[in-house]
Amino acid sequence: MNEIIWTNTAVKSYETQIDFLLENWSMDVVLKLENEISELLNKLKDYASLCPASIRLPSLRKCTINKYTSLVYSA
Image (cartoon, rainbow, N blue to C red; front, top):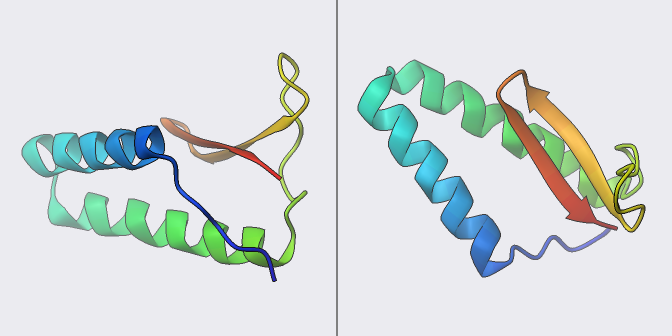
């Protein structure tokens, strides 16, 4: 099982997005996004290469969570 380590930039970006959703959308939207992210992170713990490599930076991988949100990580 792989360990997931968040960078400071990733934490700030995540918090900013959640804050935006809390201000402009319903709690249901926030909870849905958090659930989608949690499910993806659980999959990435077992399958680090789950998402495709980035075209620009092959050392990074990019997962699409929904049409507005992506997660970029290094495996």
